[in-house]
Amino acid sequence: MTDPAIGDAFDSMWAALAPVGREASSGGYRRFAWTAADAQAREWFTSEAQARGLDVQRDRNGNLWAWWLPPGGRDHDALVTGSHLDSVPDGGAFDGPLGVVSALCAIDLLRARGIKGRKPVAVVVFADEEGARFGVACAGSRLLTGVLSPARALALTDADGVSLDDAMRKAGIDTAALGRDDELLRRIGVFVELHVEQGRSLVDSESAIGVATGIWPHGRWRFSFTGRADHAGTTQLDDRRDPMLCFGEAVLAARVQAEQFGGLATFGRVIAEPNATNGIASKVTAWLDARAPDQRTLDRIVIGVAERAGRRASMEQVESAVGNESVTPAVEFSPKVRLMLQDSLGGGVPELATGAGHDAGVLAAEVPTGMLFVRNPTGISHAPDEFAERADCLAGVEALADVMADWICA
Ligand SMILES: [Zn+2]
Image (cartoon, rainbow, N blue to C red):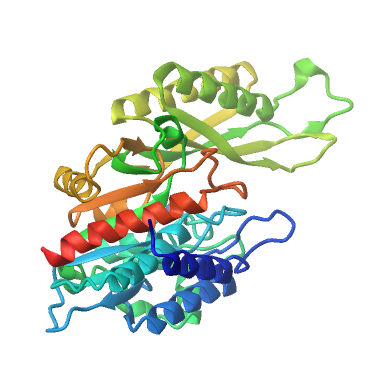
């Protein structure tokens, strides 16, 4: 049974964060990187961490770190935990914040239990995880590890043409100092990200907590279909060169391919030009998000969608092109960390892979990394209905505290 004071701390942090960046019309969150809402969430974190006597530092890439250092000043071999506070458009309350709030609560719990370790703990808030504003996910952790070059990052622009360079400068960051940070990476002994589950595996296994095995390879592809604009009321069907038909074919093909090969394929974003109700479109651009258990399956899904859309395009006399925008290879979390998490949690915790990207996936290439998932009763995520029961959240805090205690006392 968790200390009631920890439940209170969880509730009060959750309540303080709840209105930040919340969109009244949808009930979802719009905490985009380097906006006022993002700044407010980061300030909230800084004051919560400082209230606990943690040493809060902003790294060169804009990520926030709150250090709980043991007496004696040992500053490496740290257990780092945490997540992110930014969101997708109209995202849920749990994706990101649950990992941050749980990390602070876990420190409270260790202190309440009188546990003093020999190794440090750090709670990290990675900047710009969702990539909702500038298009590159996990920008903060990718800059930290050097996977994303400062030059490429700074040139990214948002929908209004504001560059990431300008946005970060406005937030007070010296963008000339961006880039891989070896000194900081060397301090990390292990990284454990706690995250709300973004599927229903834990519901089916009747467990509040899961351990991640890895992340599916995934990527984004841009499909463009160029036809000919014309009048919707006067152009004969045979005379049309309608790119929307090819887009429709691509959407259905994505579903068929995903079902056939056991992956996921989604068109969630589309731009029709000129976007008139009474006009045949001249051009349709759409983005395919595809994910699969392995790279070969992912390739087969995307090739299948491109082929079917391409066949339709030649039937309709429409030009089609497919370009890859990003691919994130499969991630396997450290088997040692998986074992360590199982040990700390008493064993028998269900293990699952996920199709969602995380900062933990980026960190896994650098330091021993693992993830804990907290049950999501509907599996809904990246939407206002994303949810986790309070009791499950507190079970997550407890799990994280147990993992922390074992690490820092070892
Ligand atoms: Zn997340």
